[in-house]
Image 1: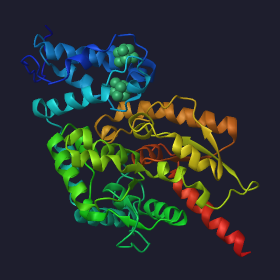
Image 2: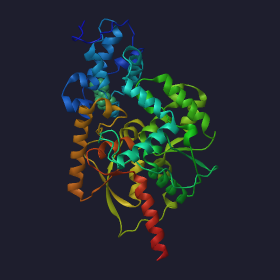
Image 3: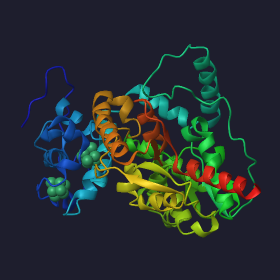
Image 4: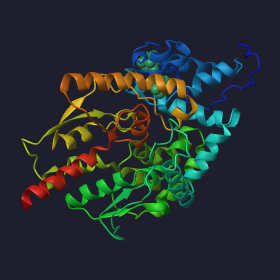
Length: 408
Ligand code: SF4
Ligand code: SF4
């Protein structure tokens, strides 16, 4: 038995308080091979901030003989849910499922802070989110908004600049924050898809937020409601393409989350947009052998570890640029949805390692351009002074430059 730390609100659990699958829990053989892939263990050297330690603490909780004290909750709350450990685990421990179940139980035992729940509520109100973002953009230009590590320094004053067809052969999922804060990225993606021969319908405000951040915070019922809304708002048979790794991972997980045949069928037609394009590179203008730049690629965890689809970004970029990979084995940058807001010190420590990896890549290759296929990672790295673009913004520029060359 462990006693609670002074001042903490201890919870005395009953056996099975987390509702986790016992076979999954005992599949961890405590080998420790995941430890170097865990950003919070790398930052702290603390076993309780490691995957192995967290699994041991989950087992303790499920035994019913352990008091869930403040330290227990912090061990779980400091997990970024990056799944670097799951990719590295030779025993196939489903860490994401274990942590997802733990977070869902924690949402009742120690609910997420009110500021997070307020932020998540706004994400489900697209009109309010867009209006608030424009207002903030104006206030930023009047120097009325203090710099924060979470909000981009310069929000856009405009939305999408492209016409949006009402009918098409693919859906571009536009989400919530990315639609309000990075409309130029969606425009670039639409431009590339159209160059590859597709007509693009946007998911828009009717579909809204995918619920990834709600699920991340353990708010399983809210995430389920948002998933139902997304599925109900989109055409029943078209491929759903996603240009945000976090949203893509969430949409691909609807089948597992809701457990219905409809949700499984929906998830089966979701693709990261690079997966779609990687099979259609012949439709894009050929690379200019003399004009190829070099680009450093940051693999978002939700693409590399959750979707296992990061190589499609490399294949697409390779069409028009020389790809420079990082040497950190996909270690998380610390963004982790709302993690950088809730755990700023650990998020900064993880980011410092990523910044160093980018500096090493730049030194050995001479490349200065950095790309990431996840808006959360881009914004987190931008707060450390690194300009990060979406991979398809580069491809869109390649297409425009090729068109200009042809005209000359
Ligand atoms: S989670 Fe996997 S890699 Fe990590 S200690 Fe357990 S068995 Fe080993
Ligand atoms: S999900 Fe990421 S932060 Fe959490 S234990 Fe695994 S590697 Fe560490």
